Image 1 (tube, rainbow, N blue to C red):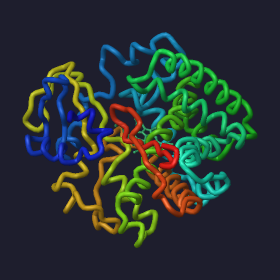
Image 2 (cartoon, helix red, strand yellow; image 1 turned 90 degrees about the vertical axis):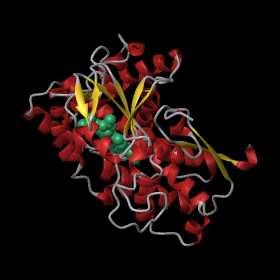
Image 3 (cartoon, protein in one colour; image 1 turned 90 degrees about the horizontal axis):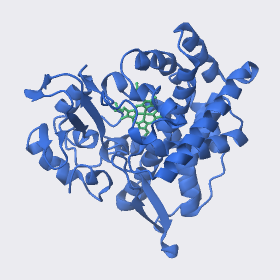
Image 4 (tube, rainbow, N blue to C red; image 1 turned 180 degrees about the horizontal axis):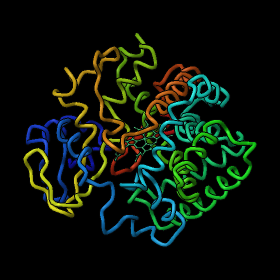
Length: 375
Ligand code: HEM
């Protein structure tokens, strides 16, 4: 196993434990990457001003350069440091925190979830993006189109995408931008969330292109990660019969799933200037693979970390990152996942018919389900 294969391996956690035992920050010569595996080092890297989200020589991946997806990517707060991150974040983060959980529940409840694996896939992937689209003011019919376009757009974020998928991602970026431009022009149709974000954007004097890119960013950040959270909760229920017979409240179950088996297993940082982290000297140009999932299993972070405890006290988790890029959508993601999981369990009272594999990814742990009978 290596730390990249680990993200989609059936059980990467003993491997992460071995890495932590070798030291929190070790160098993998085969992958030419530093590996941050303990909670202490993960936090230190994510807090360090010289550890950036993109390499200085390639702010936008070369594979998408020149196309519309690159224009969006280049403006995303997730992919920037400095003002290009702080400005959009200061407009979006406070507004995300005003979303009413009853509205999220109502939006999830209004969606029809079909039984079986196909219905599950739609509920996991398309559902959460439709909810975010609705919160931003799109109609349900537009939301379905937006979620399809988001599925196409996220291909530009993965180095595993084929040239054909990248072409589709460029087209999706173009179409998503026009949908948002039209929505922004119809000021009377704006949802409270969108109106609030726009007001704060105007106050920071940020560019309209940045606004649109970061609205697309809300959809793309939602897409795979929320699907993974819902899917990994289903995996936990299938693999732990005790949880099925004595089902804990869904919110408690999800709180432990996100710690125990996170949908985002790792993220990366690129060293922009020589620096020293936890006694290790790093050079400009070094890359660090930040193993969030390993940090969650560090006994220094959580007591008895390899045991799944839905009612765990003082749970601590780095699944949503930490520091200046920490996920501003955490509460929303948990709400959407909770409401969706409740609906899924209503239409799929038994889960035994499902089998799964993880979607190919360098960092996401997102199960894809099949009906056993169709295998
Ligand atoms: C289970 C679901 C989710 C997980 C596990 C997750 C995880 C993360 C992580 C780990 C980061 C930090 C990446 C880094 O520092 O390298 C992040 C950033 C971000 N997330 Fe989430 N996320 C989830 C859902 C969402 C949702 C629903 C939204 C919004 C609707 C969202 C919006 C964002 C944004 C905008 C950023 C970039 C923040 C910045 O760069 O300042 N995420 N997320």
